[in-house]
Length: 458
Image (tube, rainbow, N blue to C red):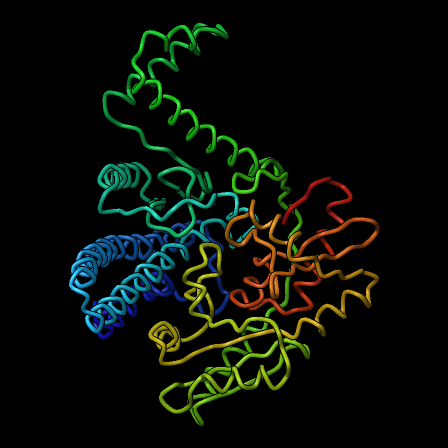
């Protein structure tokens, strides 16, 4: 899909996600304080918001199929040009392939933004739904049964929204997430076909018999294919049950890491520098760039690349002798658990410009200055060895990995308790725009929670 068409589609999708509900109600909402309090108005607002969500989801299904099919065609072309040793053509195809892969990630992040709203922006809960699997190719999945379920569910629950998990970057528990005012969020695994029906018959018989050996004896009469299918279904249902219990109870075991986790019941309010980013976006329209330093340690620059190249940020960071990597906000589309840019208070035009690379936001952090604030509060800061860091990261995935510089991770210690700083902390800083001191506050709160719940992981 060319960038002009993609930009048009993005503008429509952003409207469905952010504005449709407000624009299609019979009353006005001028501010958060003016949010509807009467039951009738609340229901009307919810129905219209969900209508916008459905319009976004339906359009993403169409567009995602399109870019996934483009990817398949480009991969075939890539194989052909490599066989013919056409180096120039190979680079052209590679660039096109990278472009449609990027478009796929952007489209999935649109659906992610719906999930974030359904789960009330609670990253600790959202992380429970991810366990490091590959993205689902919806051109080769049970999408039609999910669409059919959606239509039937909404027919009986007109105020509800049904999110299709396979469209997201990170929901890998269940096929469907439903959301309604009365029931909140619920996760469903859809099963159809004669084999699945037989599996549920066996489970029903087991529930009636209550015999510990019933399943073992019953499955001995089935072939190997059925037993494997049965085992896969049980694992899927077990994962859903495990995650649901962790979310409802507030503690459990994380599917991705196998570590004990606890979900904070008390809300931790973290400061953000979103207003500063918004100002930088507006200011860069005048001279092509705008920069700022957050709390003395986080460098941020916004560049209109049609007027000023973003590489000047790299030179600034080098001049400041900063060792931490430079983060381009577009990297967030490849991070399953990053905060969706569509939920920030930026203008629609700014969001589209950022996605298309017309405006670039770059950030980095002076780790020495930031870590000094921990030492000032009585924490010991230790740089781990490369071997130690590699050993821990070998068992981790994605945002659970330890952040490292030149292969060395960072460990904090206080009151004889230690903690390694993960990459997810910096994702919060660079995509949710939480301030460095707020992230420090979050980590220090983790220490307090760990004293009450051994093995806590945020």
